[in-house]
Image 1: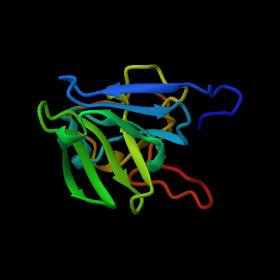
Image 2: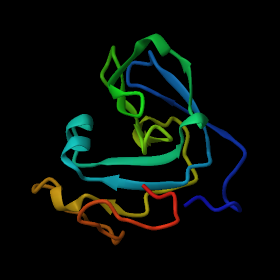
Image 3: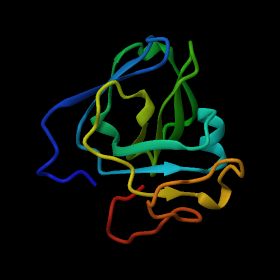
Image 4: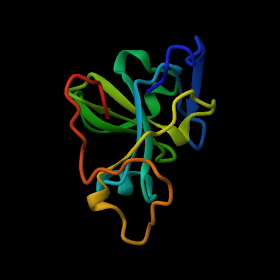
Length: 147
């Protein structure tokens, strides 16, 4: 979690691979994790998706709104650039939060992933080499806004 002492009042920039879509988000992420589920692996083409969660209303598209390709509906989707295919963010938790793919951030966020989730469906060819906590599926923490 981003601590109030470390969080700045700055806005982070993000963009897709080809530059058709740009976004802005405050450096106020609530949580961050590495997701190993098969859907995240397929969407990113990688072993896992590092993401940071924040209220949906905090993210704004600053360029290329017409270049968005949305898989899903208003309350749950993966949002890509339709030109290059970059996964920019996922709308989750009944449309209330977005999981920003950390690889699309241009600026360095204060937050870092704090756990690995859905390790039960992790790619068998990938070995986790850090000491972050690992969860077989989605951790349930009552009373916290957690990924």
